Amino acid sequence: MDVFEKKLRDICERFHELEMQLGDPANLSNRSLLTDLSRKHAELLPVVKDFKEWERIRQEFDEVKSLLASDDPELADMAKMELPELKEREEEAKQRLLEFLKPKDPNAHRNTIIEIRAGTGGEEAALFAGDLFRMYCRYAESHKWTVEVLSSNPTGKGGYKEIIFAVNGTGAYSRLRFEAGTHRVQRVPETEASGRIHTSAATVAVLPEADEVEIDISPEDLRIDVFRSSGPGGQSVNTTDSAVRITHIPTGLVVSCQDEKSQHKNRARALKVLRSRLLEIEQDRQANEEREQRRSMVGTGDRSGRIRTYNFPQNRLTDHRINYTVHRLEAVMEGELDELIGALAQAEQLNHLQEAS
Image (cartoon, rainbow, N blue to C red; front, side, top):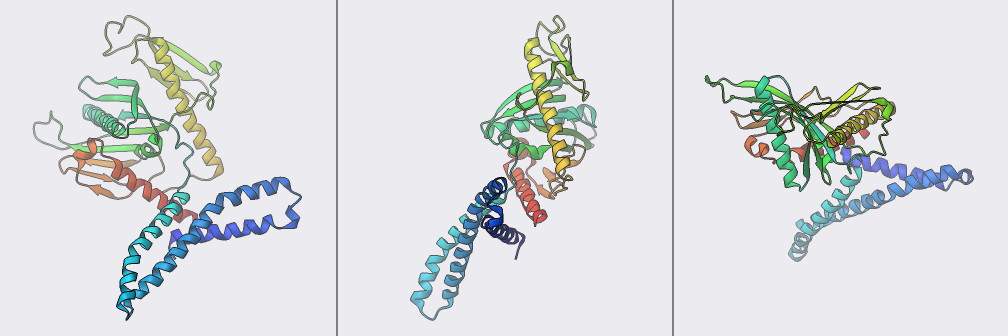
């Protein structure tokens, strides 16, 4: 019996325990307990039905398969014709069960805020940060998500010391959350005359966007400073105090925005980023109170951990969390991330099943 089937049988056993508790006369007078038991029973009922259907189809498949060796040619031919349909039904039932067992992501409905920062490697790291930003923009475009730059610190050569942007659309956070971590690049810089390969890095943070009603920020907890913008921006640069720096005093978090000419717009964007960072802190705190953070094959979310290497001379990308390697780096940099993110999602799902068994 594999992990998948064992987990399902455990769920069925739990379902039958709930039925016994619901029918226990000793529990009838406890309305609160009965409500809780009924809710859990209702949640498990669909998966128990699907599991029984899956078992029934598998049994029928085995019976039909055994007829292939029949001495009756007509019977064997009928069995051969039935098998593809049974296999398809079995796979459909299994997929429904897999969907039920998939861990529920409380942030699945949210938009996301991504922060990319150049790490070790100087200008080459900043250029790589810019490449990652463009990669995510193309990926977002392929999913019909919208991208809004909230704050940026460009280097002037096409790179970024830091860029913060929002990705808005259904499923954005659920898929992009796998990108959090340190991304390492190995390539020959354009300015390298000897052809020597340089190694540099950029860090990516992926935050679920918080709603205003979820994270209530008291004005007394904020210190807001305004200053003159610097860098590209037109005639208003260095002439008006439009840039905004917000410090959240209780946590020490600091967010700056200067991309807009309007001080009001920069303030609103800075608050959006701050609210998302505070939501992440709160969710981490709650998770740590409930249980120790589980280490999984797709990483712990620690931004300091190297998750991926981009080797340009070999056209190779390796994700170290699942030992996943492809030799089509150019396509990945053009935003073709679905295959990789799909592999990470499957690995996470299997790991949850193993740990829950």
